Length: 394
Image (cartoon, rainbow, N blue to C red):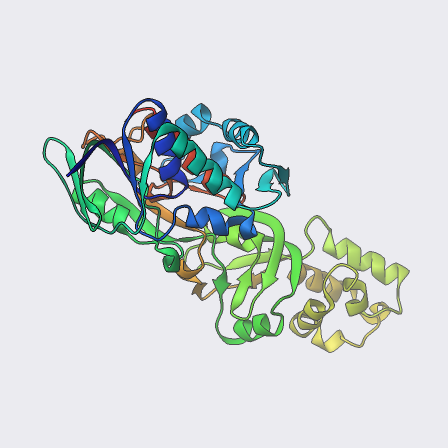
């Protein structure tokens, strides 16, 4: 039996950060990671450059049954604190869009930084560590293929269900239930939509075509790029919206965000009366997309110059372009989802320490908790912040 002060299950962003903070306080920490290497999600994130935080980490950028829960951790370890750590390690970074910070070179630098910090404070890390049973008597005991461990504190940083090929599993939720904690129903978030029927065929024909658009459900709206895929619709705006979408809901797409479409078409009719509508719209949208829209919204006027199209018809076309209605069949699911919505109910945890209210010494941090960030570095910041809160308490 190996004895430690703290056992951390999961060697991802949250687990490693918690280990560093706890060990820096003199705690003996062991990290148990089931896969062959630590930080796998860090390595693949941001196209290999790791979108490690966002300059605009506000509570409104997070989804939870209790929207206030994240405030304490995020305010006590901020994006500026993590940026300072990155800078101390000499990692060059840049802002891409909307406050998203990426490594100039490689996400490997973030993993190397965390490993360096772990070595500095004496964290022990075991990979290929498959956990069998977890129990508690006076202390927590963990049985694994790497031996048995016991500790006063147990931190669950095992992540969610997204991207199972990288080792994701529902282990953290099972463990929470084992100790009597409730779990908010989980589903895939930040994930592409899929379609069936004619919309599937249209998406396949447009696969690879992107455009800037505003996509909406009754509860949320995002303006960014959308991308047609061979199965449906993706792109930053769509991924954001997917976290607010429920099966059966329609989505609205405004293909001319920030433009008064009706006025734009009326002006074009006045200034370019001999032009075809497809020619006018091709100045704002990809030609392949305009060709599909033509079949959807003005097939009978495809070869009619603008001068010959009535104002009423132009108004109807403009309305269609600003509120193109679609009903996704589903999402791509956990296979390609960047995050898992839902998780360990925040009502079960202290927002100050991430400790279970009913099981002292048991902590849940990162994605396994019912706090999910928007696209753009927010989920990494939640990992750093929630881990820091627990690391100060274990």
